[in-house]
Amino acid sequence: MNNFELIMPKLGESIEEATITKWFVKPGDKVNDDDILLEIATDKVDSEIPSPVTGTVVKILFNQDEIVKVGTVIALIDTNGTDLQAESEKPGSDVNAGTSPGKPGIQADSRDLTDQPVMETETAQKVDQGRFYSPLVRKIAHEENISMDELNSIKGSGHDGRVQKNDVLDYLAQRKQDAGQSGEVQEPVAKNVISVDQPAKESFKVSVSLSAGDEIIQMDRMRKLIAEHMVRSKQISPHVTNMLEADVTDLVLWRNRIKDDFYQKEKEKITYLPLFLEAVIHTIKDYPMINASVDGDKIIIRKNINLGIAVALPTGNLIVPVIKNADQMNLLGLTKSLNKLAEAARNNKLSPDDIQGGTFTISNFGTFGNVMGTPIINQPQVAVLAIGTIEKKPAVIETPAGDLIGIRHKMFLSLTYDHRIIDGAYGGAFLRKLADFIEDFDSNRTI
Image (cartoon, rainbow, N blue to C red; front, top):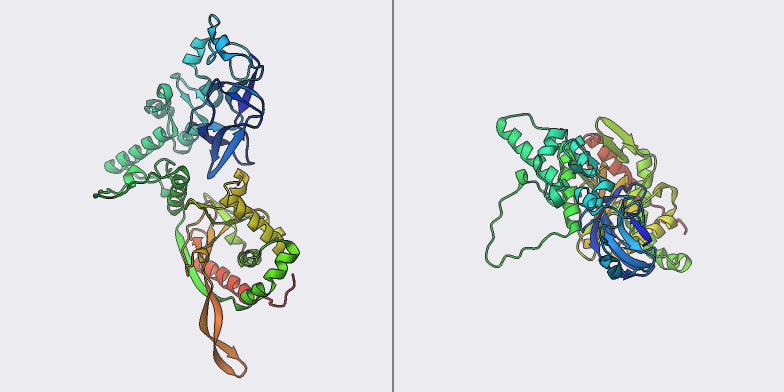
């Protein structure tokens, strides 16, 4: 057999590993070029992986829900069209153990594959006691100062007793609980790690009683990830929120006047959001600390302005695609990028890179008819802006002839920021400057 090695693809610049969420084939299945083989997940994006060759699936090296490092062989496909049944009937032949990753067509001793599973040799390293630990497990152990003796003592729930991510996280939770009972000093909250499968650790779990008629719904994978990120953000950053009401009358009237011509000319629908993005970009340039991250005791002020836009999905979940280098775009560029990402998000067509690298996030609460909101910071960013719905309100209008009562378009802006590096004066000044920029909108500008 001439086996083609299917590897875990690199789907984004910063993507180092992915989770196999579903296999669509099994050993013995015949596949054609571009047939979908499996679905993988990176952060909150699912991607379908097609077959690059035509042949027969010989072996699947990783199971569903396993985390696999980019570049690792995950399956073998026979491209010669060899009859697997005929191969398996040959004396001493074993389809599932007859090849070794990295050496197509070379048979391996089935005993070696039992003692040292193929899936382990590609992603794990051996330690003194003969146990194997994936890079993810070793990374968590290093970050949480788990000694090798401690690691060796953890009981694994995986295949052949393999220690998985959740085993380590459960151990950390128990260690913390034991330390608390003995009166030992606890680690800072920012050190806590929360499992994707257990967004709220056992030590924080609230006892829930059930009544007749109650419905139990299992969280899907994306909801677990959202829960994890939200809890972790609250643990890491002390959140403070400032709010103010802005008069957006000139902006609203301008957009209503030009929207049809804009569509005829550019073939793009323009909403209010690109105009607010434009205002955010101008304001960040005056207050760069808003476009930053915190690394320990270091503040990283980002050179590029990459705007994340929170998008509600039909499933009820939330995802935040990112407009990269938004500060280099004009209003048309922002409009096209926003429309493209929003459409891709709603159709589950975002790539992993589309949700990476954000430096500041905008959440549009007005989409749901809400007046204002207090969003949670999208780590490792330090601020997030909430935009409320635009409403007509009576307001005092100052004129040279005196004050008048008139109908104006008003909206609330809410800025939630990380109080570790942003104080109230800075956060309030940013929000006030943003409102001023919106209120001073040039209603005579051309498209």
